[in-house]
Image (cartoon, rainbow, N blue to C red; front, side, top):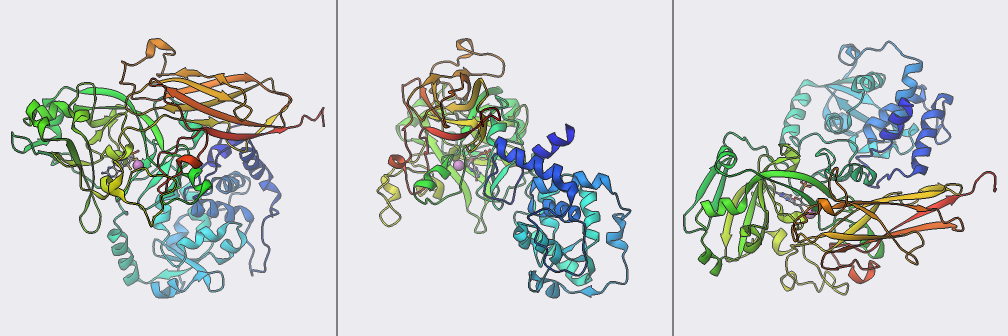
Length: 579
Ligand SMILES: Nc1nc2c(c(=O)[nH]1)N[C@H]1C(S)=C(S)[C@@H](COP(=O)(O)O)O[C@H]1N2
Ligand SMILES: [Mo]
């Protein structure tokens, strides 16, 4: 059972792979089959083209799992490893002497199956041609071809690194020249993303540099508060490393002049305020718009949304300390945020919010230094980020360096020329970004996390359980989620969960301050006459805003604000008795 569990959990991660592997029962089954059939050797998918020496399949699969980040194949390797352990120590990687010395230039010539696929690791040169050729899906490994494995290693090697090192040692063909080893170090440190933090491999990666990833949907609704490691990550730039001891937040634009605050100041001079708030990227569910017509942007699934508890100083309190007075509102309409993350030209990430939201007692805007009870993780804005509850992710500026009270919105690209909605009729030739307002509060949203699209259910089951999330912007509480099993012909009302423990109305937030999502669930009688289920969900918020039923009428060229009814199709498998 333990092995099975491991196999299933490993089957989920596919960091290099942009297609997401939603773990539907079918996929899971498939992964189990992969794991259990591995003993038989030579899987049907293997291409047995002629190569001089044969390595046992398990080696190849394990290495593939590591390089391609493909969990199922890694699991395949791990299971078999136990059966027939070999005495190849990791030391062999360094010690195997008498091998030729290669320059980086020579190594780099080997980037294809025709010319051979070579990689370097810790000064060793490895010819993994055979491995790549024999492994279905091995093309991904070509990304590392001709270069160093280390960057890939750092990203994907989480399990059993020692074991995979042993495997690699079998492919060693030479040593990299000392000069080139030194150069490699230099290249590594000139990569602005080289110091990005490690991430959990369960995340589905939409882009590595900058890092953008979302958790598998079914993990999302496993806990009301999303563990930070699984919280979706949306970075436009390399993660800046800010020293908390010297960190300074500048507050500008108020009659009191410039106020500079250290992290310590933020923590000690202002009351600590805690809220639970859901953050959603404007591009959440963009992939559904892509199916209608291609849009520009990261291909997010349904999980570019997560929920956390945030603690910090209220922005309101800090603005008051910096000299905000009611008459300021006569000229100041916006509060701009500037991040400490920069592109190569030195341009920082930035965004702004309306001043009313910033200064309102009910706005709950935080300069947060804690997420889920701990220091904010690097990816989420350490040491300080703006948390603007009810407002699109893009305005929740991370690694906050500067706050400017201003008559103008932020002049940043992301405020002016991105994160805006347009008509389905607007295309890249006609779009005028000035004509549309920046997205702030987000519309009503909901999605189904279980079952996954394409999953299979046995006809013999009595009931079917459907789970998901629902959330609305602007502090509007989700008051109802309707679920249909027949494509929208008939509906049932799902049960809402609005906090970790509590259920029902007693856990309702104050009106207009419902910052956190509701998880919902329904267990309904299985419709035995159905050939297939089309499960649909739609939510309603406290203003009775509802979701549109289809995507086409809300399609827009940037693929933002994608909130149509969410639909998943589930196959019905015939019972053996009936078949
Ligand atoms: N400084 C900075 N802040 C930023 C971003 C960024 O790239 N840099 N991305 C924004 C976007 S578009 C989103 S959706 C959220 C994502 O926050 P998360 O990574 O904590 O989930 O951060 C926002 N704040
Ligand atoms: Mo975003």
